[in-house]
Amino acid sequence: MTGNDTRRGILLMIVTTFVFAMQDGISRHLGTQYNVLMVVTVRYWFFAAFCMTVSARRAGGLRAAAATEQPLVQGFRGVLLALEICVTVLAFVHLGLVESHAIFACYPLLVAALSGPVLGESVGWRRWLAIAVGFLGILVILQPGSGVFSPYSLVALVAALMFALYGLLTRYVARKDTAATSFFWTGVMGAIVITPFGLWSWEPMSAPDWVWMAVLCMTGAFGHYLLIKVYEAAEASAVQPFSYFQLVFASMFGVLVFGETIRPAVILGASIVVGAGLFTLWRESRRARPARS
Image 1 (spheres, rainbow, N blue to C red):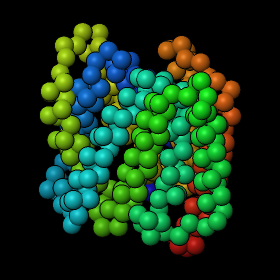
Image 2 (cartoon, rainbow, N blue to C red):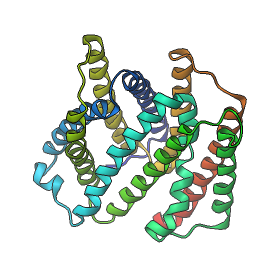
Image 3 (cartoon, helix red, strand yellow):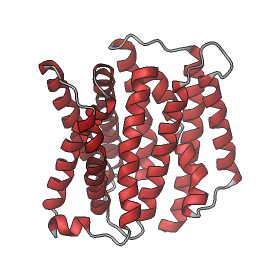
Image 4 (tube, rainbow, N blue to C red):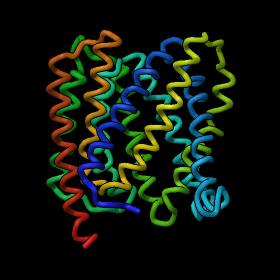
């Protein structure tokens, strides 16, 4: 049941973003040492087991969780998220946490831009203006045509696009399916699809890195558990803006742990993107308020 403890929801969201940023840092470390597909596969095995355990404890068990009238869309969602995680980790490895997250911060703008063609929602001129401003911020970060431009910046942008589409499809299936059903399909379908590629690219892993892999799996499950608690405590419109703390925490790990540097253009561009994203989230919450009333 959803509550209305907004302060608790905000605090939980900030903790959740810290856990996910820590997970991103571990993914970056393991992705530089081993094949990304193998790393994501092991992570998905644990995630699928977590999804099945949570689903089994709910009313109706696994059978109820798996029941859906839209298996193709649910299956595609699961595959899309698994691929998006692979692409994101690839961006972490080659671009770093700071710039990857600065670019990835545009995904709420992509959600707004694609909500019309995917969900049939109307997007007003104010949100289109915010989307345009946000993408100017992306150009500031990317600096195309300059000596600092990296092709891997486009990898991070593709990851943001994939995650935005995943979010929209999650909204779409929510019209008929419960959150428990979507959660089940996300974990299980992703594990089924990624496993053959992970086994094909398997490499021996050192004992210390197996410890890091275990921490990665646990932070992933714990992060998703916290996210469930976030939305149980407060409305999404109240807590969603605080998801941008992940950019702050990931940048902190990137600088302090991996020795990354933050270019002034990244700070400026990310500020523009986050500002546009916050405005878009605010407009969406205002639009949704009459519908809830």
